[in-house]
Length: 233
Image (cartoon, rainbow, N blue to C red; front, top):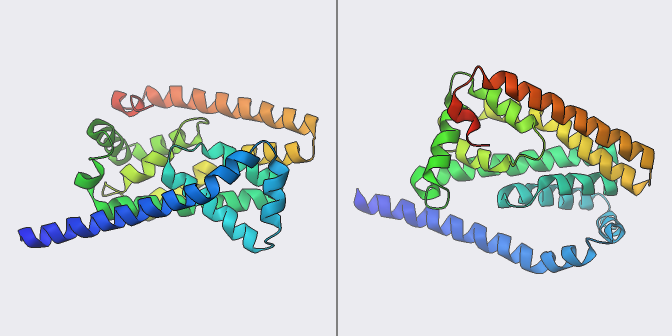
């Protein structure tokens, strides 16, 4: 029994190391280039467009990667998507990338297990998010949290993988909740490329209105939910 347990831990450790090496390799090879050209987004745009349809796949993988890394702000990549591909295509590619990364994070966490993940994430935070997701109104709360702009949401998918929640149910709620914010940020990027100042202003006003509505929704829901639910924010 102990030998079998040790073998499982070895496999999990190998998977973690391989994932870490892959992410570090990508960061080492492409990180400096991205940083160097961040102030000249036209170069990044021309670079991805030079790959033709293959550039779509590269962008989707970049979006998925930012979800897996967690610490990288996703809104920045949504803006880039709009700047490079315009609103319609940029939105579709961004959502596909976000969901690909989220689903990968969920199943990676489920494979590694609670004890393994708890070594890298505070146990208290894991427990709180786990209770939130599996509470009576957890799905509604999850939907609201994912709607609110500027709140990091990617860590939630890692922790959700440690709970007995039904994956399909979570992915549908999560995907729908990411649509409004993604459209707004992609539109900002598209308007930046076309230098449409009025369009940028309208989009930012829409963001403020959207953020205000979600904040009010949060306040309403807070009165009907457990106090621990909002302590994670």
